[in-house]
Length: 262
Image 1 (cartoon, helix red, strand yellow):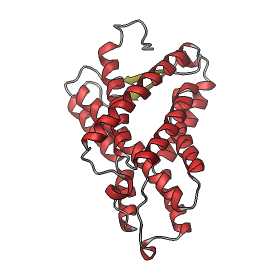
Image 2 (cartoon, rainbow, N blue to C red):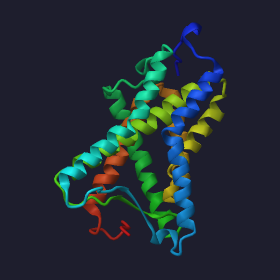
Image 3 (cartoon, helix red, strand yellow):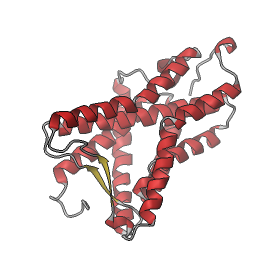
Image 4 (cartoon, rainbow, N blue to C red):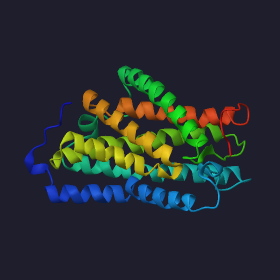
């Protein structure tokens, strides 16, 4: 992939770059990884088996009060995107616009959409099989994508949450992290493993299946990012995977025997 060439005078020192990476992740997915570990330890030490426990993703903060609940959902999405804005600011300040540097330009090209759909079909299908197997054998919690009631904004909020997940994860743990680690002199293989490990860490609350599946997904995404030089196809793929998972669960839960709901 082509790397952005930045004048040396605009680049922070290696020490500052290292501190920057730690701070960005302490405010975002690194903190999520620690929270996921604590959650998983709680699940492991509970009296019930892992597959008898549930992990809910999008929940209603104000049951019975739809407008207040919508306000909380929109606030949650907006606040989650702040670290992405911070990463964009830090890259821009060092003369590395996110569009040219990471291939994040917010208007997917036709090729981004096509590649993203193909990756989503491959990763999403295999990920579903892995989840069902891990849950059946007791290595995973039962994932409940949403506990939202039948409010009018349920589907739009689920789609918005899916897109938010994709933006945060792919911009920060894929594009930003690999770019900065490369500037710090890390070899590609080591940076790729680190990116995949971080991705796996904040999915640990789901169980061992979530850990392994997202680690493999992280390695695949890192390799494709280096080949294509753009985050957007992987961002599109992630968004499609989550949209299908969230909306599909709402449509199928309780109607098909193969989808665990509790």
